[in-house]
Image (cartoon, rainbow, N blue to C red):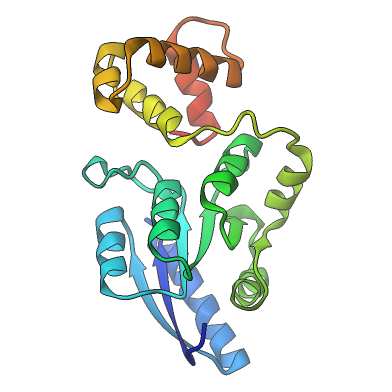
Length: 221
């Protein structure tokens, strides 16, 4: 970053959260004599529009955004991946209330964020510290993320995008034939992936309902 004014985009569907982030940037700017130009988006379409307008130095992305099928975005994780692919120098900060180890590791694996914040960990001073660290010395992970990384031993349980799409369409009530068409996979491939997902989530029952309940609890849908 070689500019005196940093371009910031805050993406979260709760205005109170984006207000808190904005105040943290303002306070940090006053403390460190830095300038921030802040844009805010509360859904995927407005976030994509903002990303088309300029290149941002930092983008805060909430994981739990309302899915947008027309934009092929099921969660903030997908937006994070898209930003990473499109803007190589933009720093990405993911934030969520979920603290499940598998969900955290999936986001780290897929997005490789410069910052990762569990909202329940944050106080105003720590939020300012997180912004400063991401600007100057990334990455910055809040304490729950760090603890998760210590406890998580294997990446075998990280779900890829197709797994998450499969769960999403199951939750929408689609059957295996419809999902196979939507994902351009064979029915056998769908069956194999569902079996794998049930192993991941420790589901012995053949009903998809139990799988979806566990996936929802862990924040994958």
